[in-house]
Length: 358
Image 1 (cartoon, rainbow, N blue to C red):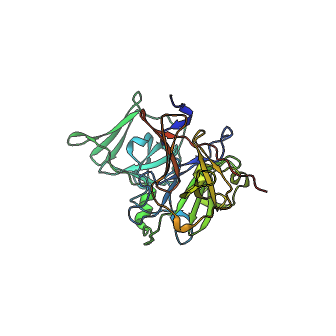
Image 2 (cartoon, rainbow, N blue to C red):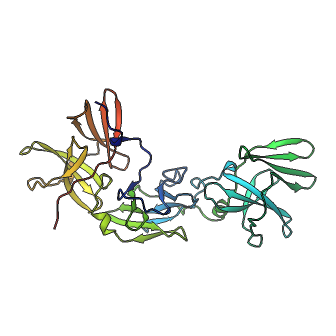
Image 3 (cartoon, one colour):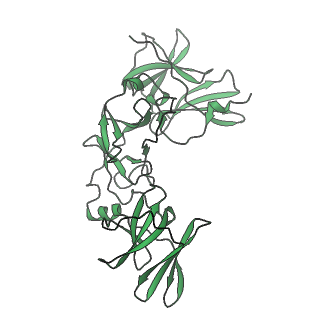
């Protein structure tokens, strides 16, 4: 029997939606795990986050229990020349340098750069030289260095460009590291102040009720929620969304251990519900592929039985020829696979059935 495509998927991210209705999303800024280069800082082991289409990187500060700017050259996203589109150049009479206006294809922002004699770009901030959108982008423009000159040549058809040096001889200058304003600032400051942190549990969701990307961090038994200030691109602490709390997802459940319930013949999964912040009991429905909360008063959670095995539970499928394997990801959260003779399939999250509460 074939497996419906709606039941399976490939792993694309560790983020999740708090609601299936996302039709009204108006391009809010998303919180993403890692820095674009590293998931954890290789220097301090701090957990990293960044904002989509932004070069701002944050780490979870174990002292303040909140995300703060991560000033580490090892982690900040590196701007590549291929991500920039040169528009035109203006000579700065004060510095005798040519300021090149470039459009960053990732952030969609217009930035200013100067070309160093080595052929590398260095970002500058010259407020007195304003970008003029009425100036048409030229297919080439020239930067003078004494008797030498560097010509930036653009190919409008292929949307590529190159740097050519003309002096004693003609040569093409290959791509070189770009020194952005952020990197320049980091070199002036101490990097991360010797902070070394443990890895907290965290979850990134989209709250459709408030149209916000939410970062939920669990550290030392404390849960804090953060969203992005759209103007400053800083993290601000926010309250729980009551509507989201009523929509439990599989990503909210952290399995602790399993236990056989003799009166019913069911295998109970003891979980920590990060939304309700309680320990609860669930069974796995092998027909729907979803989890259902149960109320067995005779079964009590015991933390001494907590298991750290990557595999939580294996259940034979009554529908497909194979077994469901429920295991933990690197954060301890639930991932489901269906293992068959035709291959291994990642199973999409299914609606969690919870008990009615007063």
